[in-house]
Length: 170
Image: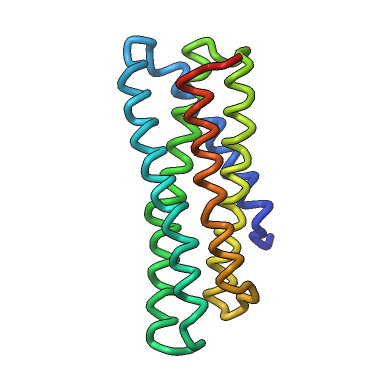
């Protein structure tokens, strides 16, 4: 069976769900603050990668296809995605869902807003993942201006998420 992005996404969601369910059973509420600290660390790592990857794309656009510089950007982009961004996103989701459940936040209005923004951030993550593949295959058709705009989207989502979590306006 061919491995399409949709199949990989569904498998990832299923595995994440199983890990979260396992955490519900194995980890007691006495570890809530430790899990929250790890969640924040994972979010910081995820955001660092999400802010850096489009910046690499901006520079990659100006590199000639097939050049040493272009090939170096391809390695940097792939490693950033696979070694930092993907694992950080998975840990963020797993621990975030555990915190929401254990903290009793699942029914809170602010949490619904946060969840929607986290889903949007995950969609941007998916777009950036597909873009890494496009750059790796020398298929990027987007200009640097596009990547400069895309670079701002994670920041806006992060601001919204932080305000909702800290202020809990509703």
